[in-house]
Length: 282
Length: 247
Image (cartoon, rainbow over the protein chains, first blue to last red):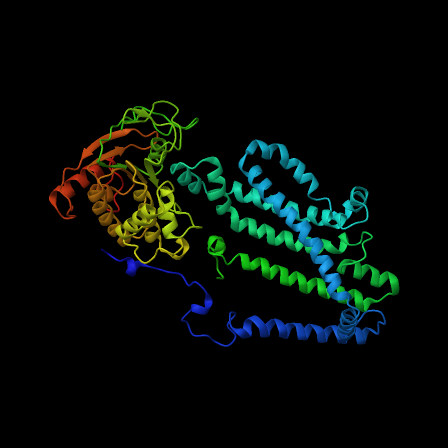
């Protein structure tokens, strides 16, 4: 039996398995992944602090002010409470968006008549900013968690649906033909072929939508709720011009957004979807 | 199997009056110039496309749509990238019991020389290996007929030679009917029992050449060269590289 060893080109599974010599300054080394961003952050914080001092502003906080603001929130037990509240609302709104958006996108992407019927509707709703929906949200849901959840849902559902539709419409015909050749029923086709072939793009859509959802949380929490990071920012400014807490809230939003994105990116590492992200950078 | 007179395509007549018969267990190649419609023909025969007129019958039954008894091997990207080699090869075996499945999959993975790569994913394999996976997947489903649409077209020269050898060996042991489309005349003469030589678009069967040479075929034998030259001539190709086509 001839072994294909001579022609085997098995690509590197991960950069840690690469046999090539590691130089200092390599993008994948510890230096690259940690020292460079941290170095950049340190530089940025220094520049920020100096800029505030030089401008003589008595409102805009220095990094030190922000840090002590964060400590204050922790001491009052508010930081964790606000983070949990925001994450809770985003989770609900985002999960509902995925639960509706992915199946809807699959159906609309596959059945062209449904697409023709629904797509104009989607394209009209999509550009309406969630902020514009605030009065309607209050009208429908009153003053409760449901209103910001609704807004976050709205912000997320469109990127997810549109990405899923695009994934299905741009699917390689070869996969469909091969699957039909083996006699799959329509439901088997959807579950085993269409969904799996589109999953990398769907995850990309989810990643973008999560970013949007988290971004909208500030606007969503402007509606008379009394917890959450968005609420913190609005309230800190209104109640006492506590810009140190305003920026502290912004910093927390940014950091959590980063963590959420990193979590979603972990999804890209599964074998079932890794093939969809093969490009220049492994 | 027969596919009497068909046309395909609306504004452009791709195929015109194609008539042919294929017998069980035969290895038949279809050669023709690029764009002549040979792939279209194969897709119609496999049931992926509908001919505007005429019909395809297999063992007397008309072909309406693709069927697991007639598996199609694509030129590239036919294997599913979200499944590893083992799962791809087993794709047509959903109705079998678990033990039977494992047994069949192992057998065909070995047969195409991919032992040891069961857990690998297609994007980790070379083009030749991916085609082997597709062939193993087709064989594992135990079809009556295998349609191959330029399956080695995306591979380099040396790999192609190797794949042809392996394909002939497998065909001789599995005894499937194979309908193989290629633009490579030499490939057709190396592989086929009979060759359907197509004209340019709108394509029809210009001639049918019997290759009654014993296997393994010798690339230097007089018989091989004679058949190859005959087809070159039929297709208006000159044997002198650099000379313009013979009228």
